[in-house]
Length: 459
Image (tube, rainbow, N blue to C red; front, side, top):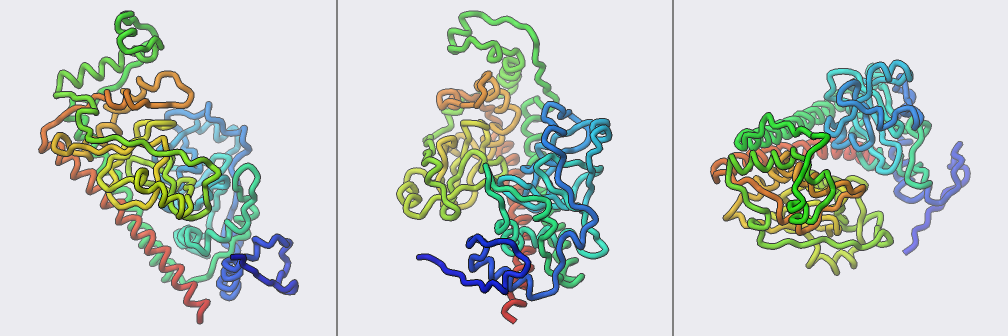
């Protein structure tokens, strides 16, 4: 059923937009909320708003193991800049190229693709930004940056960005768009309350990471791998019979570091192939890009799987009819171990909550025999150094990594005592609970902002 919005020309103000999508009913409702109350343009409460440097200024081949942090779009999640998968460039590079730097309390937007907003919160030193980031230095004397970040993650904040997206190859926002964003003026005490809730959530996220690290450290310590450092040798030999036995002739497969790992494992504990622990293994399905919808039931791809759960990274959706047709065979169930096999193979996560969605072909659903092994412990083994090195070996020199089911079934899994497995699994569960509390708190903060704005519009 078609929707019709009629807007009188006199109400267009100084807007230069005549495309009908700009005046959809939900956007007109947004106008009534934002324009009918005290508000500020983001530029009016900021000291600086800058886009990242031109694309050729910060190149991936200049990244270093340490130096100054470079914030990239996928570092923005859960309303803050996450410190995982961080890359660095030298401070000399920053000075030579005259790159802008930022610190805790500054806000960043991803400007291409999956548009998000987060606050820099947990870094000990200054950071810089990649070309696809827009950064805002907020004037904290005028407004609370935690409140701004929370507002931009509400439906009222995000719709302002959505309304002005430029679609070329992929959705894009400009610095001028960010500068024009309207931020409702809510009281200082309300903003401070939002900040406290958000910071409590961030504390839970940090606690979650600490608990997960403890679990991984405990696993590696039990396996005698706590200080194990793979040493990649430039030259080595392998018997031809071994090459024929594994049907591989690429040199990378026979890198001694992989064999050293296997030798250390087998000397320390009992080791079994993954297939020994499996009751069933099912593959997802590819539906084709033409089936993607703007809303509906989630189509869960490899990019939506992480070691800590499902994430809405560039989330795609399927319509209800197709979902219902596929759900019986391709919807994951609680307790199953989801395992990626393509592109970024070897990400394992035990599904802890019901999901109404379909998994893509690059993901496997493993039913684990928990009489033989704890499924959370098994997932950690796969995600840890134990699994990563074996997967790296199996992947060989492929440009796009593919981990075949026959290779997956042969993955060697160390079998620790039941009590130790349970202790490790308990830490993983505690980590999950902390992350869930964090997300509940962030949703609470967003809901409070939305409720105040909606109540004001009704009044």
